[in-house]
Image: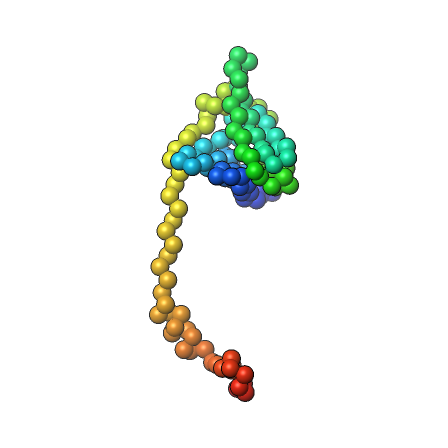
Length: 135
């Protein structure tokens, strides 16, 4: 079994992420988790990609579309997701999708200037950078 690389596709304010499990679509204020059995097919065309969900015969399928993406990246993303789709999809993909508020980004770690200064003091100097002799 080969590992699926983590793929990220940016388009406008939307971000698609796929790492072998559910496809995650982040949009401002929403995060959709789309399980693979919910997906009928993925279609990349030009600078857009569409994730089409399965639907029963009487319902129109739900389509998640992201525009403004890199064309080559969209094709690679579509190929990777398509290769991972199960042989038997779910009958109603929309029922499997969960939507939540996006997780907040982790705050950056505070820098510790004291450590950097201590390390710099311990390292030998190899010249002063002022054009003077080295050594």
